[in-house]
Amino acid sequence: MTATVTRLDEDDWERLAEIRLRALRSDPEAFASSLAREELFREQHWRMRLRSSPWWVATPQGAPAVGLACLIEEPGSPSTDRHLVALWVAPEARNRGVGTALLAEASREASEAGAETLSLWVREDNAAALRLYDTLGFAATGERHPVPGREGLVEVRYVRVLAPGAAASG
Image (cartoon, rainbow, N blue to C red):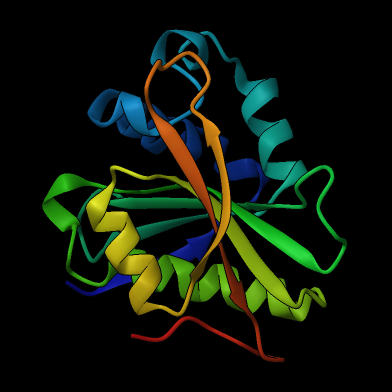
């Protein structure tokens, strides 16, 4: 599947809201937030999200967006690390290069910002995501923590070293 990855700007707030709410409907267990919470967000909140962090959507030609990603500076992490959050690919687009394309853009932006590493947390039972991250050169750090509000579920931290001008490949 060929999908164009586009960085959203503040005026794309309705697009972000649409795909984010779709992601929460499709895979509610994949996020630390909830559909009920984010359905209450108003324009101001969506715009604030887009001002504070880069967000990308992946869109096949002539079709609705099928992927979403966000990059942040995670509180408490080194300034040379950028943290991937909210990576989501629609079920019908999985295993078709969309996640790789989103990670390529996030890696490029992180590298251009001077980051040396790209990190993320992923549920240890998310086999498809773990395969993607392993394929793209991420490595488990050994850090683990329980998923808040989800008894028995654990997230593991993965990190990938970025070369200057890096982008995901694979």
